[in-house]
View 1 (cartoon, helix red, strand yellow):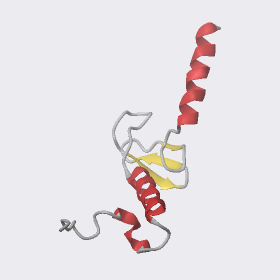
View 2: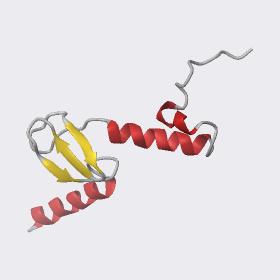
View 3: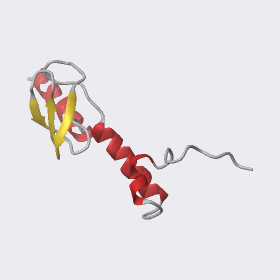
Length: 93
């Protein structure tokens, strides 16, 4: 017989949807919500205090620095690649 898991642990924050929308969609929602609710390093002071204020608005509770970033993470993969290419062009110049 299969072991029972702890109630609600498998669905995480997407448990509010119950059996609706399918397991994969609920898992994706739970992953995105974990990323958006996590704290990140501040680009200004370097502390791990950046939290999401609103959609794509991030603020540091330590130094008060507010900036625009990605919807679910302060820095997106596309933003990282743009910064990398800017650094290369500045080094070449």
